[in-house]
Length: 127
Picture 1 (cartoon, helix red, strand yellow):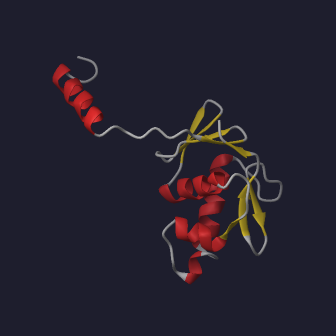
Picture 2: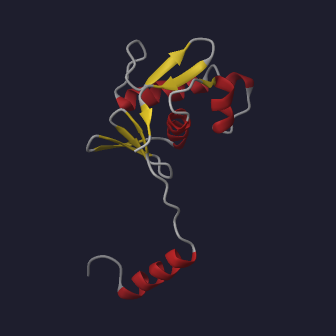
């Protein structure tokens, strides 16, 4: 038997009517499509899995539509308040995110560093 048994389908239908899953339009950055609710990004036809921190970082930047986001605002969005987070962990998350997206810090396609201020996405737009 493939899929859910009929009873399970009925329970899922009732649950979704009582507690519907919110529909949020994905954000677009160049050829990236960023799902708001799942730590997943589509790059063309390919799905890229991100860690929750990488997803929140990318979504936070994309939601600002190309505006510069300060280190402090990014740390707040990630729920991190330690002073060393901005310099150490954020750099590691960003490096890992860039690697997964195939981005280059020296010739950015998606995420640009604004020295001493923060980061911004390039070509951010909603569908």
